[in-house]
Image (spheres, rainbow, N blue to C red):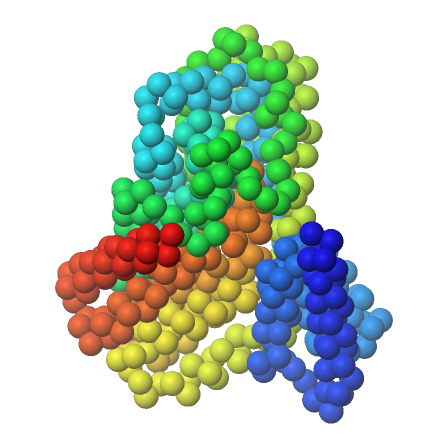
Length: 539
């Protein structure tokens, strides 16, 4: 172990020194903005994280590298860029999500203290008898929460952890099940924060219409669901996940890395809690958050979102969701839900007011690792924005404009790479959708497939990236070591991505989804059968 740590530290030093040497010999480069260099900081951070298994320093080094590139390798301005455009910009831009994370952490602590989670665990132990049942139940619950991916990750994790722990499913597998339903279901649900984000990037008010037309061609999202169900029913795993699942059967749910279960899980809970004491708070949380997103969508653009004079009743439900802002709606919806949940538990006499207040700092403490990683990851995204990476991507795609039938597959790969490097799905399709609309005839079958390939690639790269906010939230929801989640999920995501790539090649020539989608599903299942046979032979 000491030798591995020494090697890891030497690798870090070597990379930093190499970067310093590169900086020294590239003084003649006028500007890295809009060039391949714009993707260097995230690639550096991701490479260091995968090599050293240490995410905080890796992300910070990536931020520093981006600041140096954007300031022409001048140390003093680079420090200002790291602080102002990086860390402060990240905190101010995602403050609403941080508040929502803390609120969710507090609600989870309340559920545990009131005995709701334990009661649900006891009920699940009686009714969910197998690993297959627990996996399918987690998958189904994730599909039901399609409003927002952050909300999905933390809610599914809080509810299903006791169930999967009883079934001896590793935390890495739980994190994968959460991650594999959160973003994909949001990307194919017309009423979601993701649909709203996509719609905002399409002109002439046709965003939701294009989004709905693209759903049958969103191969990565749909095939991820086929993958989960098939893998669960076939009862096998491969890659690093196989070791985690084998250890979970022996009682070790974490295998390696930091055990991130927080103190509130071990806090004594009342025995009066019932299953309804888990269901009612979750329903309250979902209902209020959905309404808050709808309300904010009708008020966006106002200086004060709660001013009744700015409430636009003419907007219907879908239009309001297209206009909403999750960083505003989720925090105030969460605050209202937290107050209602505390009142509910006090009326039920499950906890006292003092115990309820003690749960709030516990919820904050539980979310500190996720908040820290999210801050650094968002800072890194800010650096790629300063380096204008979208210009480089635009120029690269424009050179491939002659390969019309192969363009959906090319767009899928490009979207994967951008989302992997930047850690953001929204930023990726924000960059690519205008490019796709300029390449293809608007509304044409190939244009719809190209847009869907952009959305699917964004989700895929987001899944694979260690700096993705959804990946970070999935680790937080499952209370799983972050790099364990990344390393175990990667082979699964790459398998689905490979089948999706082939499917987009087919779709470029056969544009009817009722032909290409069944072919893609069959390819996915056959691929899993082949992998199962190969893993058995290797064993």
